[in-house]
Image (cartoon, rainbow, N blue to C red):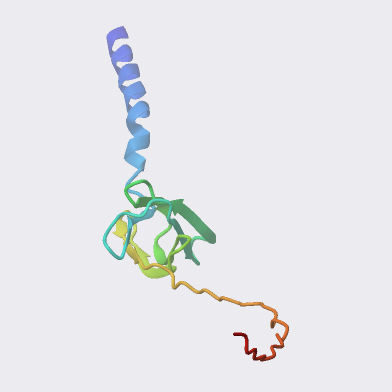
Length: 139
């Protein structure tokens, strides 16, 4: 009888130890990940990736790594706006739908921002120089 009680106790302890895994039937969130490159296909580190969605109640951001990759895990499922920004490049906005328990890939190609320069020349008109013509007959 004591061995049956001991075996039951060990069985109960094991069941309670591994029970939390049984209740996690699946992920309740999704993720967005991808890469940012320039118009030549070179990776862009330091790009700020901002996602927003009514289901998110705000925004979440990530920054691309040295290879231009980013990941935004644990996002509620739904429709998202994904904005890529980097100084010197035009912003890129994409739309994505995050599935329950899955990851959606959103990549961006950033084009260099248009260069706008204004040159303003400020100067003073020089004073009028008066000249006279003279003739000399020197021999």
